Amino acid sequence: MKLTRRQQDIYQTLLDNRERFDHPPTYDELCRLLGLSSRGSLHKHIQALVQAGLVEPMEGLQRGIRLTEPEKPEGIPFLGRIAAGRPIEAITQAELMKVPDELLGRGPCYVLQVAGDSMIEEGIFDGDFVIIERQERADNGDIVVALVNNDEVTLKKIEQKPGQVILYPANSAMSAMVYTPDQVQIQGVLRGLMRGYS
Amino acid sequence: MKLTRRQQDIYQTLLDNRERFDHPPTYDELCRLLGLSSRGSLHKHIQALVQAGLVEPMEGLQRGIRLTEPEKPEGIPFLGRIAAGRPIEAITQAELMKVPDELLGRGPCYVLQVAGDSMIEEGIFDGDFVIIERQERADNGDIVVALVNNDEVTLKKIEQKPGQVILYPANSAMSAMVYTPDQVQIQGVLRGLMRGYS
DNA sequence: TAGAATAGAGAACAAGTGGAGAACAAATCA
DNA sequence: TGATTTGTTCTCCACTTGTTCTCTATTCTA
Image (cartoon, rainbow over all chains, first blue to last red; front, side, top):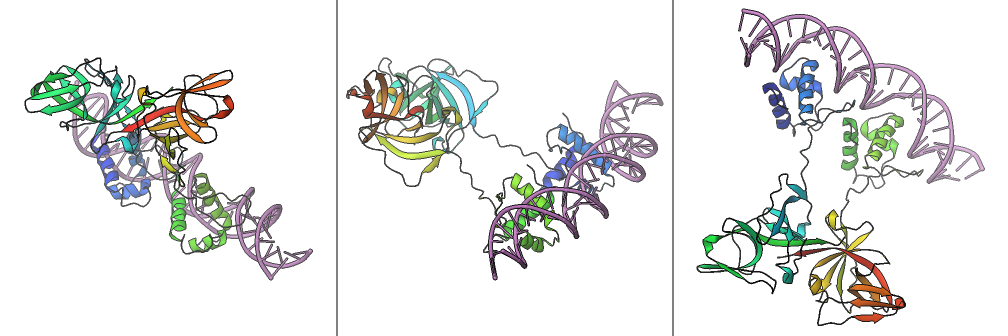
């Protein structure tokens, strides 16, 4: 729903004066603030804001004009599955997943679901959810999400030496891969893991 | 339940004067404080606050208007560490730990921190947090918290046969233990696991 | 330029809100 | 025990507040 100019005005006024009121303003109070002299006129605008979801509808009650709380979306985005050898499956609508604070890094994080057994010896199993902190650099020994050759995304333990980057799986059936630094782009570092037992 | 303006007023007054009274205020006292002359009027407002969960309902008693304690720490209790061979360290003050819904069972749950490597081949490492659903029965193959000989608590995979109970570790350096059913008491079933990488 | 959309004024209305006070019953106190 | 306090329920009333109208002026647009 698109807002008219005046409606945006009024919404802005509501935002600006949010603190000034100890109580949410009534139509009359807001009219005075806006220099209107008719509640009826204001009512149409407020209805538009309600339609737009910016103002709480008052269901027959008289408790002033309340802005809808932009409900803080708890959780961090779940971006899909990661398998060695396949790019992250794009998930169009990033679903949010609640994660305990203890497992979060300091920076922005996201969640991936592990596909495959390449890290099984680190206790990371197929189907586990990993919490990844988005960052471009990692320390040696960190487990990282790495984009290799701009093509495939993989979860591996990293070792960076001058001139080469080694990605170690944690599965004795697989072998480490050696790349040049410009082949490997770090997309995040493992910060936490969650597993559900049905 | 949304509060009306006067109800907010009154709630604020209650908060502000919380210290001033040695006893929680009666309706009459609060009326005087608010400039009301009718208990009946106040009663309606207080009822709204009770509905909103801000004031304790008084069940027939005459003990004044008490605020409900606002704290509602969500999470499930963290009960300590579990090691094969040792009882759960008693934690006097059960700390609460937030856990994603996906990792919770249907019933009451608690969290333990794993000590030792006895389940390492199941991807359960030293220091991991496990979410346990409190129940006395388990299916074969479940990973359970079991009290053995009323003495030691351990996290193992269980197999129950007529006349015997076998507890399997997931560590090839350790061997399974066989007990009689009355030696083993199931205290919960593994539902989830969380691991943090510093 | 005609028509549509936007904005506002003001009247009238119904319902919600806040309060007074009486009457009661249970709890508490002397 | 009897007297009093205290919470509850009730009816009644004033007045705010949100809503719905109609009417008018202005601005935008095809």
